[in-house]
Amino acid sequence: MGYKLLPGNTPSLLAHPDSPPGIRASFAKHNLWATPFNEDEQYAGGAHPVMHSDKVV
Image (cartoon, rainbow, N blue to C red; front, side):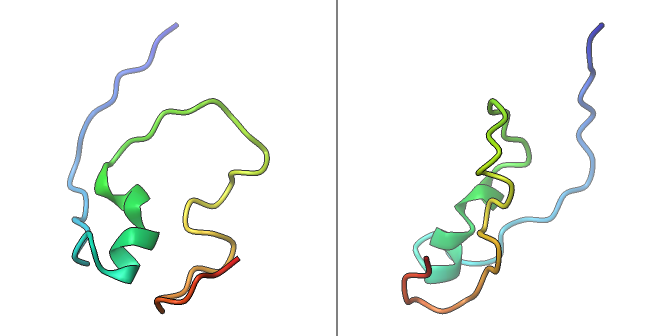
């Protein structure tokens, strides 16, 4: 069994990569990330993503 990935229309990251939102949303720089499953990594931007520059834990 295999999979075929068909690219479609995808949004671009509008935030500058060096801005706080761009740094926090660095996962949005690419359309596909393939990683092994990890129960603790369900939300790439965190459970409650925010757009300020303070560090959020």
